[in-house]
Structure formats: C-alpha cells, structure tokens
Amino acid sequence: MTCRCKSRFNAVFMKNLEWYMKNIYGKFKIELFNRLGNTVLEIGAGTGINLGYYRKGTDLTVVEPSKDMIGFLKEKARKSDIKLHIIEGVGEKLPFDDNSFDSVVTTLVLCSVQSQTKVLREIKRVLKPEGRFIFIEHVVAPEHTLTYSVQNVLQPIWKWLFEGCDIKRDTASAIRKFFPDAYIKNVRFNSPFIPVNYHIVGYGIKKDHSA
Image (cartoon, rainbow, N blue to C red; front, top):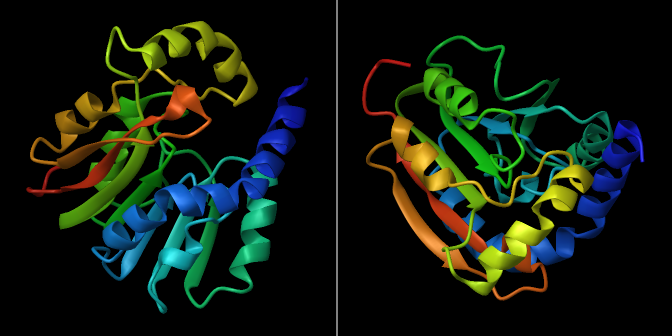
C-alpha cells in the first residue's frame, strides 16, 4: 500500500468512525471545549469531527497535513457556524507569530507527529500568555498489563498502517515538560480497539511570556 493509498484509507476510516468517536469522547470534548477562547488553533483537524464542539462564532484555524482529510474537512466546514481557516501543514512548524491564539487543541494527534517536543514547543510559542492548550490523546498502557503486551506486539504494523501512529508514547511526560502545571486525567476506555484504550484528557496554561 503506497503512502497516498494509506492516506486515503485513513481518511475514509476516520470518517466512517466518527459515530464511535463521538460516543467515546463526546462528554470530554464538551467539557474541555467550553474552556476555549475566541481565537483557536486546532492541530491535526482530520475530517473535522471537532467542528461541532466549538462555540458559534469561534475564529478557528486548523492545520492538517493530509489532503485526503482536508477534503472531508472542507465538506463539513460548509455546514458549520464558525469562522474557519484551513492550512495544509504540520505541527512541528506552525506558520504563525508568537502569542497568536487564545487556545490550541489536539485530539488524537500527538501519537502520530514526528516530534512531540517540536510540536509542543510550537504550541506554547503560538499561545498567548495565559492561553490554554487542551488535549485528548491515547498513550502507552501501564507496564505488565495485557494492553501493554498487545501494544508491544501490534506497534510495528499499527504504526505502518496508521501513518506513524505510535501506540506506546508517554505523552503526559512530554506535555509536562512544556506545561508543568497541566491538569492531566488518566482515562481507560473499554473499547474493541484494545491498543488505544488508555488515554489522557486535560489542559495546560501558558504561565509566562516565553515560548
């Protein structure tokens, strides 16, 4: 399967999985998205599943690397009541000035970026002082659990099939390097997707004027 074929597969797969994602993550998104400011950046917007959780009138910029995902995103944006700007790009190099956004959002994105450190540094840079970074991310399971064993076995094929998605990342530790006081809640979902049952949900606030 070529890279473009995988991109198309993942876009269609995520589109058809939206009903499940809403059922699993919906209540967490409602709570977290209520904390967002007026100018918001979403990194890795995918098919646009989060558009329905933003307040009407939100000035939203999304950065998405997949042309196939952007196709679905544009289709959904036409039915949305928010002001939307779509940029094809990656989180490691955001084309925005320092202190540009009230809030930044990632949901199921930090698993597949090439460098969590670079993305988180960029998130903090573009956030305004006291700006809020909210996240929902699947993470590595605790050692010696069945899920951890399953992750070990499936990681190579999972990462290849889902375009770099790493099911064994300690994302909470990465976030705390840039947002030391972040609120992070550990959540386990009992779903058929066993390798990604363990998640973190929360937010961090930019406490100073540095990037």
